[in-house]
Image 1 (tube, rainbow, N blue to C red):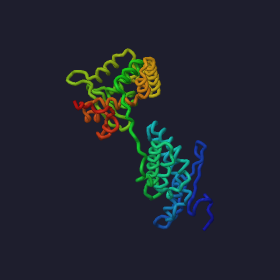
Image 2 (tube, helix red, strand yellow):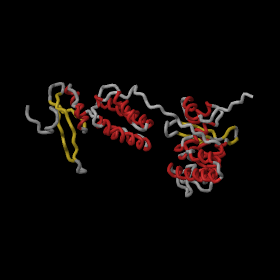
Image 3 (spheres, rainbow, N blue to C red):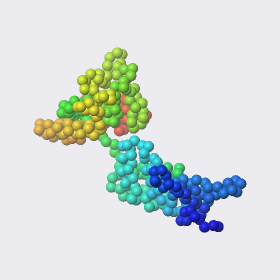
Image 4 (cartoon, one colour):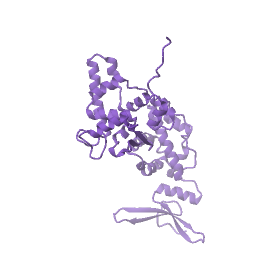
Length: 352
């Protein structure tokens, strides 16, 4: 066989083609030096990723994939390149935090060598049990994608691995806590609290609510997390609901957001999550200091534990009907509403 003139360090019958692009960058493509049905020479494209090309070469040659071409590192690389950019910015940040923990442990491991007990040992070694659950869930998704990409044919080693037990947050903002923070807050935070409570939506969904979402006396909401669509009634029998009255007040304010959001900052710009968090935390601390000054130690402690995200569970807890609460929150499973969001204890009668 004539010595290879292209890609001497590549496996037999694998070629590298290079060309200079207009941008000045060098493009490299890999090909398999094969034959067509008539026995004529034919170069089969293998792609531009060397390790993916080697895996395709191994398939065409009916050989085992070289170990250095099937490390988890390359699966993580492809996941970051092809999958992460398609996710929401907040999810990308979360996934990158998980990858920063996973990659030092699994990067150098051959994907075929990872076993369920390896994943379990990783879970047990992590000092943050809840974070470990998120990281294993991401590792499972990376492994599933790696199977689709041809890295391996093995079953997912994360399947069946027990997760750490998670206790859902059970904080309930009672009326005295709500009143204290609401009174200490500025108008922007009070508006956000009211709209969040009456609509039962997540903070991010509240901040994006716009006058353009109001049609036929209904507030249309497409939830960011689940893409679930809700139509929340603003009027019933010609009379405004409390949410309808709140929306009317917001629309009557002299200062309006130029892009139409119902909640806006003091200068009319749309309110961001950081802006809301900073303002809410300032109001919460002012309320707690007021309780301290009045020597209401227990109230001050409960106020400091109050987070804006607790408003959604408060709304679910204070609705009489579980079905109505589940529908308002956009849950398809009422048990999620009952187990995670209904945090106020049941009101019962005494023995006598």
